[in-house]
Image (cartoon, rainbow, N blue to C red; front, side, top):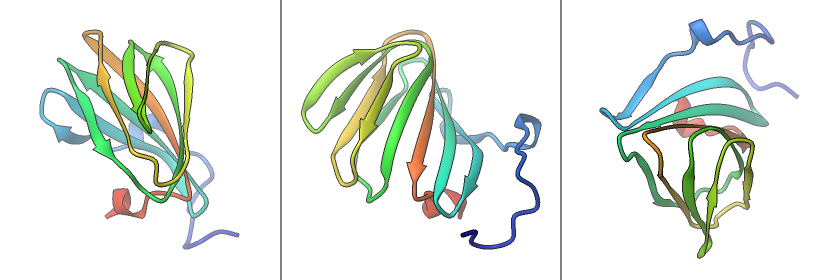
Length: 117
């Protein structure tokens, strides 16, 4: 079931706004979303990191570029291109970039309403 009016089922990168999270370190682009699912590309540079946090959404993260160290519920592992992590809802997690540049694709269910405001 769709929430709200969706103009198209196609999302083009050229139409995705680059949001600056931390200048020179972290950026994000919402790639696609609807009530039940959201894809977000997160771009890291110059030692960028994601501080420990929790949220009620389930999350899967796919590494597109670079290497990262993730802490998911106290389990610390390194990941690289092609690796995926699953984070259940409300589990504390964080990451830090280990290479000069990196990109992750985050998939959330349901969508992160806080990202759309």
